Length: 311
Image 1: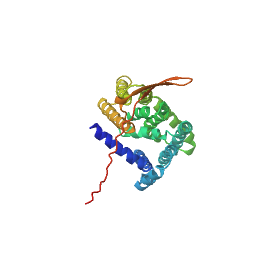
Image 2 (image 1 turned 90 degrees about the horizontal axis):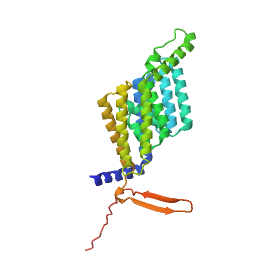
Image 3 (image 1 turned 30 degrees about the horizontal axis):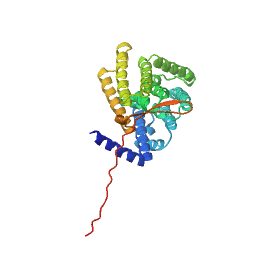
């Protein structure tokens, strides 16, 4: 069974390396297409953006752009939707999104897809894969883009409230904008689920990252399972103590699926042969080194030879 999985993995990696650019662009296209479809179905105020051809065209164009530009354009699309129903809402949301964007882009320009993936996976009921994946495949700096993604997800629930605030006259626009701003601040900072989710996700990222640095056999898989268990326990506590409305059965199923997804991704990333682990010691003029060397498992390719038979 294991040898079959390893052979499948080798074939997958072989084709991935051969068509890496095309596969990456296709995956980006698929992610952006789903994200745009979710935005349009949730908002849908701008009829021109709801057309299938427009969504496909935007997804194709954005799939060849860097992640930071994708985040920027998606922000513009959200603002455009709002502008069709409330100029005031578009202004206040635009300011908040651009502040978050420019604060983020200067520090972490290559982590834009965490901002996109977090609310997207929330909508697909797989949010807990994000912090586990970030801790395994990246570093604690991902706490910031993941937190921004969580804020954007919960922020989407406030939009319907601020759109209802409409000015009677143009002169009332500044007052309405201030009311919308206050509504957003009150809704976000009083949202226990948002604050608790940000804290738990940050803890999961840090825990997973620290555990993967330990010199223990199968530590990546141990880290993923441990992070999933801790995630389940913390959100269970949040559900009981802090009134974080999370269904226990849904929490369990989503956590299990998140663990499985990240474990599969880790399997395709790297497989080690712990039975052939070696400990090496050596020194130079300044240091004495203790090194633990674990070889990667590689399936040897079968060689075929053609023998000519002469009559």
